[in-house]
Length: 260
Image: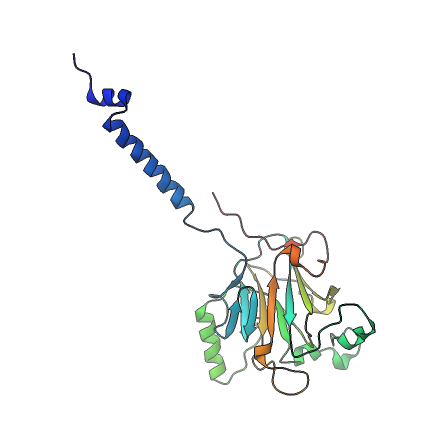
């Protein structure tokens, strides 16, 4: 009585068994490959969501316009920094000597009503904060508005959730702290010192860390330097923060965990 070929092959490890094993191995490899085909989201700056006039090199922003991070803020409380590189202005003393007065910034924390709107009146002040998702269509529409001679508002140019901070100098650190639970709020710090007058108290929706370098921010005259000399480096790594966040609950920006 003859044995079934398939049964015999399965017992003896014949050709049928070998083919089944190969198919199983190939399928497993293919499944593993498909799992790893989509890379996880990473921290960084987004070329696709930033203005065409912005230059990006790693985590460093130059040129002019709006620049956004790659990933949105999805945690309850997040903190990150922007490190300012202005080689045309004096470097801050690192030893904390008496020259600190030379580094003072006009942030208008006094009660003089005549000066309370200086931040808004300075068209060359760099802006920091967050922005909603942007695309090429947004920048094309903005370009059309500018070509028609109209002045774009902060809502039109994507900076409605940002605040200008004027008179920055080389090595300044702008800290941005965002909380989304309870009362959504965006706080700003300059070299570790809070800027309460810049606080944004309400916002909603998905937002991304953002910075804005206005066109012509470095026209000749005064302390201004060429646009090409201005650069800002985004720092999302807690180990590289130069200042403390306003509270322990503000952790570094985290990438979203995908569904496995």
